[in-house]
Length: 166
Image (cartoon, rainbow, N blue to C red; front, side, top):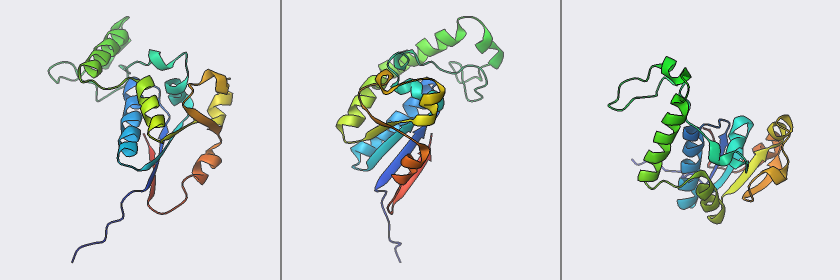
């Protein structure tokens, strides 16, 4: 006997971290959902706002301190203490960006445009905007609005909906 499947119809992604790898993970998942025809809404909060803030979106970096999954070339664990040395974080971030470019992965700005053009919706968190003293004018044009958490949760109505915290 085969189980009935209920495909995902709507996904709401929450991005709360502003590191390059966390933002890209959110954008890859959001773009994938849009490409699959899934209704997609992305909510950027706290440091995730950096991804949609004009002055910060192209300055995202890779976290080198306190990242237990960080690996050196060859797969050896990255000693956290190295991440505290001057220039190491910038170097690791440059390497990561070079690898992303070599794989032809879109940048943050291009991903946001693709998600928007595909019908995905991008939102900013009102609380985080107030905390960081940002206005809608500080954000990229693809941001549809600034919402409270409650307003974002209201968008989760309907069957076959998932909220994913990246």
